Image (tube, rainbow, N blue to C red; front, side, top):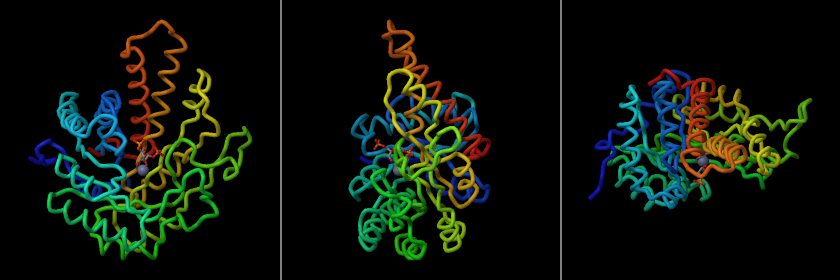
Length: 331
Ligand code: G3H
Ligand code: 13P
Ligand code: ZN
């Protein structure tokens, strides 16, 4: 028997995105794999009165079990109400790679799915995405597609222009697939090491400064698809204070660098209406946990280190909603 997201109190992304584009802000898309991450997301979004997209990756499904995560999202709707403010909550499959995976999520209470066909040829990407859209729309579920490949640190994102989304392809992709939103590649990438030191310059304090996002490509895409929801993956900023705390307490993160927050703020004011952030949360949690372990070596109650990690995560997300995405006060 299948479960509709509507029965779980969740919403799809249609109205969220329409409001975000009209209002010049972006909806936060935060990944979760466990209770503390979910608590932090909901607490932060309720306190800042922000809509939110809860993201579940294939890795999260394997780690925590998809149905358990789905039921946690259902619980999150009730938890938000209990905290005193009702916010729109979508449950989204992050980086779905097959029709079967997307179908399974749609049949089991997800309100939104991403089909990431960006590693296929243009025609194969269209065929796969269209198939997912047809099934999803029949169930009221919204679909995110992707055009262009996000570079990894092994790739030269500055020189390798073929990784960026080609503006001349977006109209055909969107019209032939029927997707509700489009993830694009304009220089962001996943993880905490988004650029090699060689791709960066250094400021007067020796801090790595990454190459700027390709706003020219974003503008071209906006011109071709006026008012269409655009998504940015790989949008962690890699806060240097968390990197420093991790390294101070025994970690070994070298040359970690992210996307400057002011560039994401600028993007959020444009057609970018969903911004994906996962790595920053991992850094905030790890910094808090390492600090407890270093300062209180006798501590072995998980609540005593996961609690501070949850608090640090909540503060990070409140900051993102208020100062980066602009979603605070929009729920
Ligand atoms: O885009 C990837 C997300 O950060 C999820 O990462 O696949 O390790 O869960 P994961
Ligand atoms: P970050 O690794 O920059 O947080 O990106 C997360 C993401 O894009 C999830 O889909
Ligand atoms: Zn991503």
